[in-house]
Length: 97
Image (cartoon, rainbow, N blue to C red):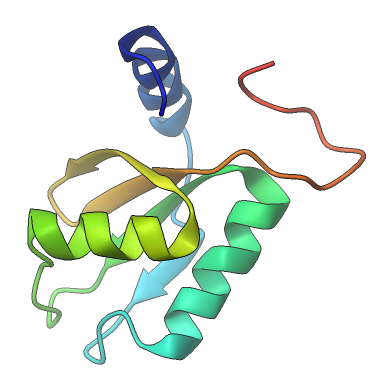
């Protein structure tokens, strides 16, 4: 679980990010979840963009998806979702170290 101070830091970093994954009309399908999982492994902090024709997920659905991925929802702003998961990938600079 990330602390409030860490969440604030992650939100400030996320402001400059472009969406790593775009979610279309199929929503959070298995393929999209695989893309999100891979992006989290490579980057730790990712932004997900929801296209206009996509139904926005509820807070429960977001929490369920984050638990499935072992990640945490940092924030949601409009059609953007920011997720964080500490990566075990070697050779990258970890955000919260």
